[in-house]
Image (cartoon, rainbow, N blue to C red; front, side, top):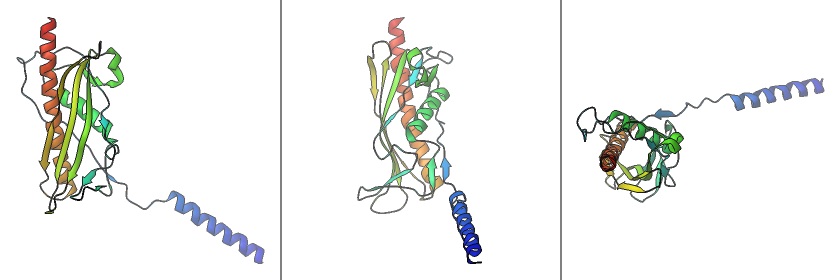
Length: 212
């Protein structure tokens, strides 16, 4: 009788353990995406895109930002991450995709793709991410999103750098809600990448003009 009760109790215990392994009642994190929306004025007459192939390399992201978590920086300089929210992927992948989007919505350059085609491309774009966080002040309130990028465009044939760009953008969030903070992130990233796209189009315009 005792042996039977022991086996039954063991079965209940194992069932409870298995249930705890496979049942997760925690809600999945909310994922946010960034989209390119800013259209820059064309550097050339309408319809005259530069046919050069441009490969957007995977951005280099500094330590602490190389994650899919959304970063916040506080007045005492400690960095943390917002709970239960994520970007749609690791930040380097998100920004690479966003950069390609930015060129696609803006005139001035055609045939832009991610670095899978870098060896078939005429030019390359490299981006380094120095800042990509929401910054809180000592006064409290809503944060300001800080996006600071360093970029350079070069010739794939000889690796010669044609131009450098360093947009440093601050966008204040309307309030301290996550949707408002992500909106500020989107505006800041959009402005920074639009500045880079404008500069790249101008640099390659000069390059292709000199070749022709």
